[in-house]
Length: 150
Image 1 (cartoon, helix red, strand yellow):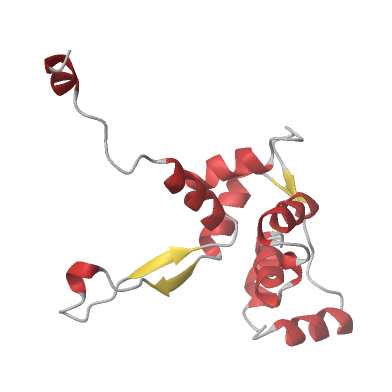
Image 2 (cartoon, helix red, strand yellow):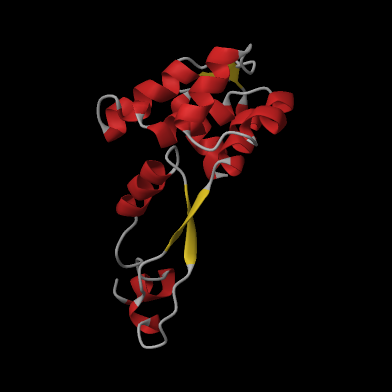
């Protein structure tokens, strides 16, 4: 659900039901700072999202880091890259490029030394942070409580 909502936000200016790599890079520059999309991890994420399905299996399995990816593309004909992606491909791309990071210790679990992992993605994290900041710290009282005080 968050993927599709994020897609609609990214597509909000064009309203063409497709996203280009340039559109996503502009959002990343606005959100995370100029040229943040040039970081190797972000490049690799976007590369994977904009590759044809058949090329993902062949080329990305062998690529260990950014330099190997660049060398392979310069040698032979590189993988085919999509100009734009639709909502379904965006959602599949996000799911295939999620990273899992350890969650900071929660107060309840500090004594037990337990840490869980959470899914993270460069294209969704800012979005979720924005929505979490808009939620009220306390839930409003129920309708019965509100009626009682009237």
